[in-house]
Length: 410
Image (cartoon, rainbow, N blue to C red; front, side, top):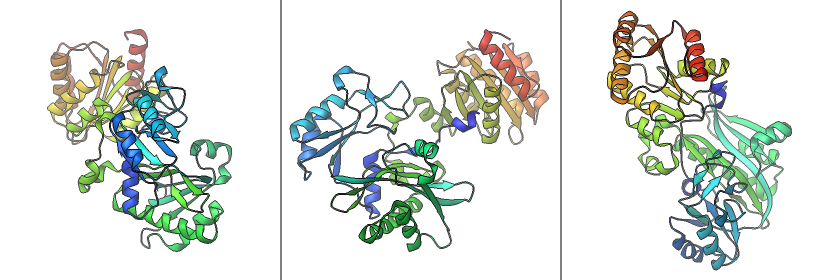
């Protein structure tokens, strides 16, 4: 179902930004510096202890080390490279910068590398996995730890689920020493390393709560040959509903890593997430939007987006939503599914009519309206002269739009 594949609308940041936050809360991270041009790489490396350096592509996607570049001049190595001299740092930076990196999370289109992170290297003895997330089943923050660091946690869960341990934190007490001991046992750490993991779990939990994170993943968390635990990578996303409290986090936003349609939608307070299907959806209410995408999948179609116009959208908001959907070249049909409570169906109809008159309609449009002022809304659409396909209910609407997209007509 579509809801299982929905990408989170949380705000993401780059690895170097995430590590700066973790460092502020006392978590151990390597020394490093971001670079915005290839020419800055050598100077950034010169400021590090060396003699081994790591050059990391900074994109909002995982699997960088196993990824590949589209351009042959970038070389066969992935988006994480080792260098043993300043000359090698410069060479790697020039090869990677402004190239398109493709990973399992970017899709075939990949992401252009416009930032690099030059980091001090370390000798790794063991790799672990550690993350924090909000467990919806318990409404608590949970830790997920595994001895299988450096691997995709989904693959570990599929092949060796017994190697994943999770535990939640009571919000009343917050994190306590026994949580650190639980992580130490799960990772097979003792002595000084057990004390270190207790300090790390405490730091990460405090950062997670203080910054209203939605997810914090350290993969890998490494044990160096010197016996030191280190957060070697960090992936962080934030709850979008709490960003108003954190202007410092909002300032870290990199719009180059976001879909332009999602950026445009955010300007009009529209909840929009681009997907990879061909049927554009405009719905009011997140639950109804998820159900709409699911039933499109049920009848063999694929949604091109998640778009929730909200419970009390204006005519202007509907027009902007329609424009964003039609601006996507992969959209071959549009389904509008509105249940009017606070939202009035006649307002939706006026918005659709206004948008079509302004931007035109080149693909099939199925409209299902129900609720407040539904009869007036249907009359407005009928009298508009637009080529709108009416639907009686959601089931009928989904079948009609899938058929229209598949055949070019109903």
